[in-house]
Length: 311
Image 1 (tube, one colour):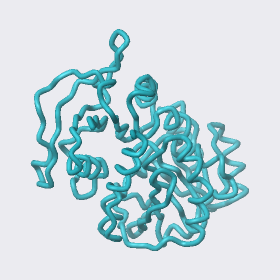
Image 2 (cartoon, helix red, strand yellow):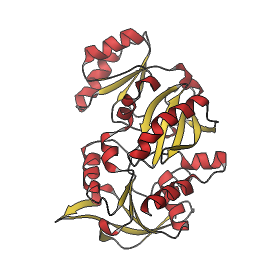
Image 3 (cartoon, one colour):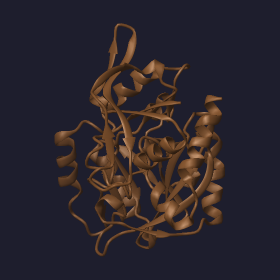
């Protein structure tokens, strides 16, 4: 197949952790032809969805991992699969790219399905499963957030469309910074904020559970660094091997059919203790860590699912 990757610049990636690199590596091993471009080079041109990028070969050599061809403009309708793999923030640039990629259906398979990536962003899809999630409020109004904090005392406050642990704050019962943080966030963004009851179980880790075409395939635990409330690996969280619990499987069994139905082939959910906190559709990570811990080829499972859908 002809495979295009829409992703952030490939040069700086960590080849021992980056999930997109692992997907490209497995695709190449399966004989597929690779093409790479960044989202700012996606375009609509007189009825065609085009991308300006380069042919790609990958190799597991630090500092020399991407062998790129000459820059060229291609019609993406000529590709079998396009991967939507750039990281958030989930802003209008990101949303516009999903609208453009929508226009490739049904001839080209876009993974994950951009219509539902757009309509089910990470922190909003969980609202469909309130029985699985901690108490949550999404609001821009300061009084609404204050009332939530008064009810629950110890809370986590973060941007609704952020990623990688950026802008995440814990406000305990004695904290006096809510008004200032609200002023800070609303001063540079029109987005609402999301506030959730703090889950003490996070000190033991924030579990990343990976689902492929709606089926759970494994999990890793991400343990926060000392003195840190955030467990994201971008900010020093330590990945470790972990087994799936019955509660994890219950959560996956509940949301899995919805993910499969909506064309979400590679999904990473976040589970703290017994609670689902996020459903990551945009650019989930964790493949390489899970493969090392469990000795399972997760990238192969993802390509099996894609090849089955193409067939």
